[in-house]
Image (tube, rainbow, N blue to C red; front, side, top):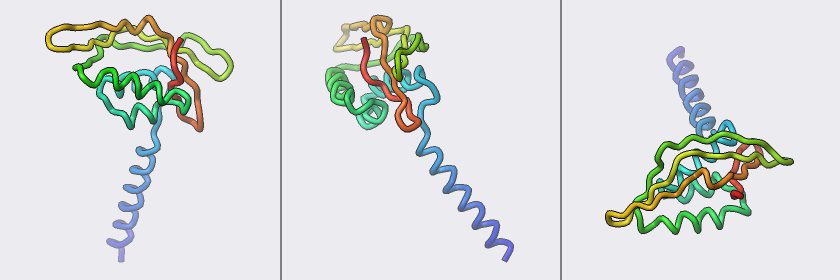
Length: 130
């Protein structure tokens, strides 16, 4: 009888842990942008969509499509919140995306964009840049 109770508790704890990890989100606006950029260079369309607000999602997927024929990597990425306006937080990143086609590298300076991030239902989502 005792074994069944312990087994039931272990099963219940496993289910709770799996449920909580499936619902995890970025803890801060800068984490959302970091996760977004990693999903972009890893060519993970579903994660990129999940990290984008509904209005921005088609643009995010279009940006992802532009990297399909090249190898892409992030270099020296660091992001920080720089302020807010209404419900939008602005995130500035340092570093670059390196896109390689054959032997040619194209560098995209991340400091050229300020990402717009909003919080919806407890999740931080990228909603474009300015």
